[in-house]
Length: 78
Ligand SMILES: [Zn+2]
Image (tube, rainbow, N blue to C red; front, side, top):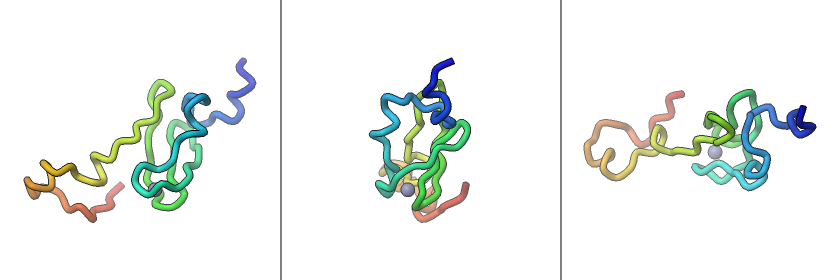
């Protein structure tokens, strides 16, 4: 249908896709089906309804979480 679909494997909104970089290390992102993957740190950001979820919550705990001591800031699971 939309000719841009061919380059849009991640499903990310093509209007915002060029502006996106990894929020964790500022590197470029690769498109994979249903997600964006950082080329440098290989973190995966799921795309839901065209919107990439660029959250750092699962990788870099916020201050309140770090204070709780429940997560290792250097943990790189997933
Ligand atoms: Zn990265």
